[in-house]
Length: 310
Image (cartoon, rainbow, N blue to C red; front, side, top):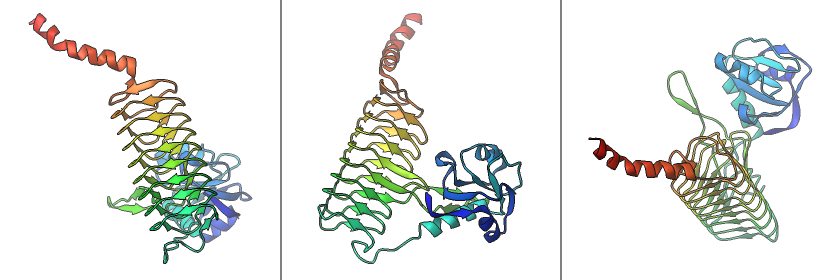
């Protein structure tokens, strides 16, 4: 998530009564989770075992709850509750605007777009030329829909990320979802799909990709161009799926992994680790199909082998 205007680290230190370590002249240009950070971003960590990972990331400004050695070209802000500071900044720059009408007055809808009855469109949504939003769909705040996009009936685009901060007392505090959903040009979204916005980065469905009905895309997922997902596929948050990937029906994909370009995953498979592109996979856990079929064939022969040995 990018700020409308850069914020100086000195200003942040004064505002949050933080100890400032490192370069006092830096400017923060955005805020992101560790897996999405870019130069200029703010990131945070409140667990010492993750300090080094955060400090070595691309983030320029790091919120910590203990002092640490600051790498060159970065700044550390030491605060008692890094998560609260992080969440406060996200809420400020992505303020919640409740709907009081079916279409928020701040939504931008191209005159050639078709909006059917029952559609709800939240604040800061943009819908491009010749797109078609079918009946009873929900388009959440900050969603960007390109040109010639079809969103099927009852689809939910831009719901909150399923992301909670676990507290010391074992309770959970919800993060403000400051990211967006971006549907690039010529994307088709089937009926009843749900696509969560990112926590601070964007959930992206690449140009030309097609989603069947009742598919769930988790927060911060990036789907490449010309992908094809059949019904009831579920993809965990922060996963990256490269171009031209095919996921057949009821494939489940774990969070924070990568599926390479041109991979095909057959129906009902479970993907628990990253997969190379250009291959076909099957099973749970999903493996390259030739190896999986050999394994299944060997298992079918096992009873006969046991009888011969007994």
